[in-house]
Length: 414
Image 1 (cartoon, one colour):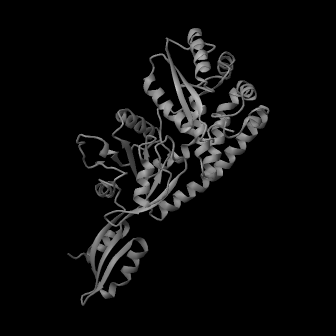
Image 2 (cartoon, helix red, strand yellow):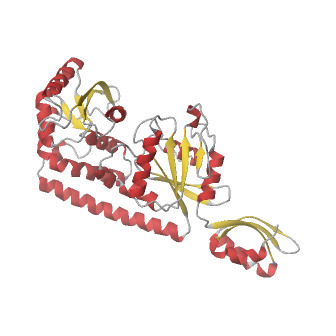
Image 3 (cartoon, rainbow, N blue to C red):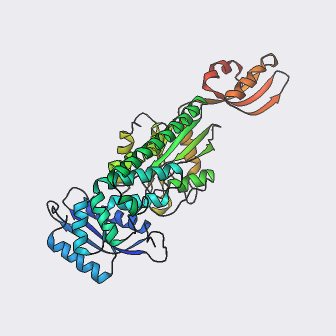
């Protein structure tokens, strides 16, 4: 049975990393452990080696690989996960020495993606990313799969497909690309319809496990999976909420970001992230109780900049404020909340309304009876909250679309 599916029997795993000084390896391996747990692996040991560069054959040096082999034997580990991308030859060389399955960080992330994708598009994106990643590694991975069987890192296309010839896999990649283009065209059509119908959208973005799905559930009862695991949400979920000024905004939950997310994985899920680039407002959720909150915030901001979101207004939502013991300053674009307890939500909604581009304006109007047709115009483009028929005309509380605000101003009343 595939280990990732068997909740009662997690695979024992060892984490391995090379520290060349390029990044904070300890923090990266901490995150790798969270990823491993999400894939139902039980981490029993870590091996980190400092050296100026990777060994050309086995990444880690000969002595460290020997130590890893002993650890695998004494701990009964059935899997070693490297915190870096491995080539086919590196996987083959390391497995020959360790005699256990070896996968890398990207293969682990892809496996989690495969386990958690729900929609047809999500599944297609996962398979495409897996095949693109595994195609150049086909020979090495094919041999290791046939020798060591399935498990974490092999979910999705499966070992039989990976052992077929490259032309067959290339054809499958082309088919997946065509299918995804069709789905993208549909999504673009839906997006253009929303724009045409003046539907406001807000993209919820942030580091994985920051509480985005919990927030969406709190606001909309969307029922999105919300749990303390990385990549709990891979498929787009959108729900509409009402703001204090009477406007509605459709919130879209996007896939969480992660440190050192491989570029081709960003490409694979660009369609979900592009919702941020096309949104009217971005809700950037940060877990303030995380000791690395500042670094993760920068990771998110960098990716948003790459997607061309620089001109879109952002509300910074500092989540899990109930878990910190110090006061955090707020301003016109920053709010402290707890998606779990609901504190700060009212102010957050006010900030969203304040920072959203003005698409409509709430107005109190007294519309003369001979101009009563204007009420129908308001209703078709905006929303009427209440109407009271008086001697002087129709006393109206309405959300007036920006295109007819100037026309409505003649009927303003106080």
